[in-house]
Length: 273
Image (cartoon, rainbow, N blue to C red; front, side):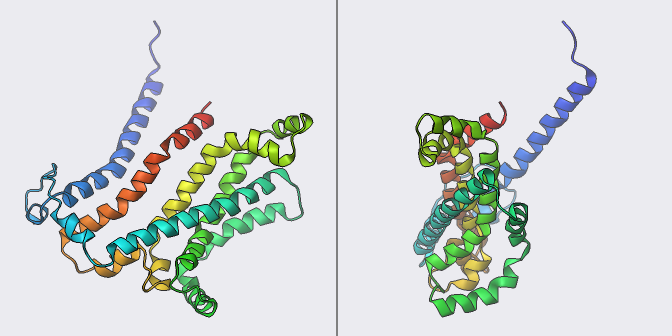
């Protein structure tokens, strides 16, 4: 039995250490958030800290009963869902067109799509506010979803472009020779192959909308999302309520990602064949 070379063993150990470090970087803050949100105010403010929650839901119950929280949570869900639908509904056809068709300025168009993210949102806040007031989209779910779609759409286009480019066009041509139209070939041959990637792109759009706070704070007053509501209401709140608000903000996104995890695993399997 041959021994593994030393440099390979060290490389594998270094990779495992980096994976553990990155996992801790992501999971430890979430764990501490859960522990503090499920602890009593005395435990949150006390010392030494406990790393095991006492499952005291008083802070969570008080936060959820606070006026405006339920509506803000519903607004966040509606805006994120609408952003996800618009981003994929517009981005996937654009990515398919970039992948399958040749037209003048194709390379420049891809660059321009990416360059739209070079403009910081605070720079566009005042023109957007004036435009939305004139068009009646100010302080509305649709208006905020359009702004979030503009943030997520470039990524949706480029991700779906890469997905469609990775599928040989010969598969579609074979379906055409068997009597399928372009739409039928796309639905029966291409869509099942790119569905995991499109789902990942949809998750990305959902997370962008769910976490966005600047546009939600500037463009809404009555119809604030949960992030804008937390920024406005919990700035001077006690620490237990801040942890409870953070827990309520993180939990729906985690549930959504967990619900569609099989598509993410399928995409990982395709990428590593």
